Image (cartoon, rainbow, N blue to C red; front, side):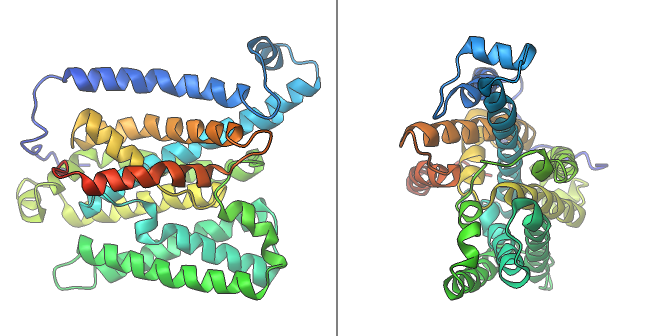
Length: 346
C-alpha cells in the first residue's frame, strides 16, 4: 500500500508493552502444542513414540495410516481454516467498526450453504470435492452483492448499511436453504456433515485447490493493516492523512471473500471463530491492526484445533463436529462482548 497513515492515538504506545510480548509468546507456543494434541488425541489415542515412528520411519502399520491419512490432514485443515477465519473476522470488525462482526455478518456462510444446497439438490453432487467450488462461488457472489448494496448510497460504502445488507441477505438465503433441505431430505443427508461445520475427511484433494486463494487473502490482509488503522480515525481524517479509503475497503472485501469463502468451502459454516479470535487479539495487543491481524493468524488455528480436540473427547468414542463446539464456546464470548460496559474501541 502506498498510504502511510498516522496511527490513532490509542495505537501510539511507544515500545511494545509487556502484554503484547507475553501474549504473542504464549500464542506462538500454544499453536504447536495444539497441533501435537490434534494428532495424538482421538478415538484411538496415539503415543509420542507412535507419532515419531509414523512421521519419520513409517512401516505402513494401522497407526501410521491413522496418523498420515487422518490426523495430519485434519490438523492441516484446522490450521488453514482457523487462520482464514481468524484473519477474516479481524478484517470484518475493522472494516465495519463492529466488534460483533464475523464472516457470517456479510452473508458468506449463508451464500456458501445456499450454493452447496443448489449443487446437491439440482445437480446431485454429494462429495466435498464436488461442491467445493459451488461453496466458494456462493460466498464470493453474496459478498459482492452485499458490498454493492453497502456502496449504493451517495456517500459511498457505509459500514452500517453493508452490515444490515449482509444480515438480511444471509437470512433470506438461509431460509431458502432450509426449505430446500426440508423438501428433499434424502438428498441432503450428505450435506449434514458439511452444514454442521466439520474438518473430518478433508484431504489434500479438498484443501489444496483453495490454498492459493487463502494465501492471497492473507497477504492482502496483512498489507491492509496500516490503512485500516487510518480508517479507525474516520473516513475524512483517514483521507486527509493520505489513506485511500475506497481502495482499502475494496481490497478488504476481496480478502474477506477469499478467506471466509475458502474456509467455508473446505469445512462448512463454522461460527464464532471470526468473532472470538479478534476479540482475544485486541485484548492482548489493543486496536493496532498490525498486531491484531498477526495474532489472529496464530490464535485462529489454535482455537479451532483445541475446539476440535474437545469435540473428540467430550462424547468419546463418538465425536462432535467442530462447528458445534465453536458455537458452544463462542456463545459465552459473544455474551461477554455484549455485556462489557467499556468495549475496546476499534
